[in-house]
Image 1 (cartoon, rainbow, N blue to C red):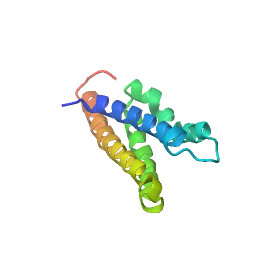
Image 2: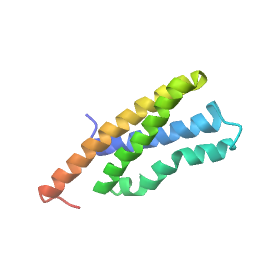
Image 3: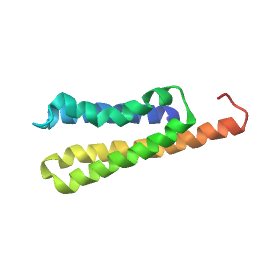
Length: 119
């Protein structure tokens, strides 16, 4: 079984890579330019990347909040854009993994703190 922290990092990285591929190449928008759209799509993930890498407890909570926004985006695309439905389903799966893993990693991190582990 994969440790929750590693699963969170992997899911965040895969989600970021997927969004870059989706908005950069697979279904690139006309406006804004594809590179700008891909960058805008990953800004929330970039905001928590460093704290996640440093294993900070609040980063896992923020990751869960951010995942809810991506989940709303995925559900909107699933129901609104038939041409991007498959892309949005992949996003939804990655977001669900991220949400669950971040919650488990947060609980594990807090348990280590309570038990006197490192910060």
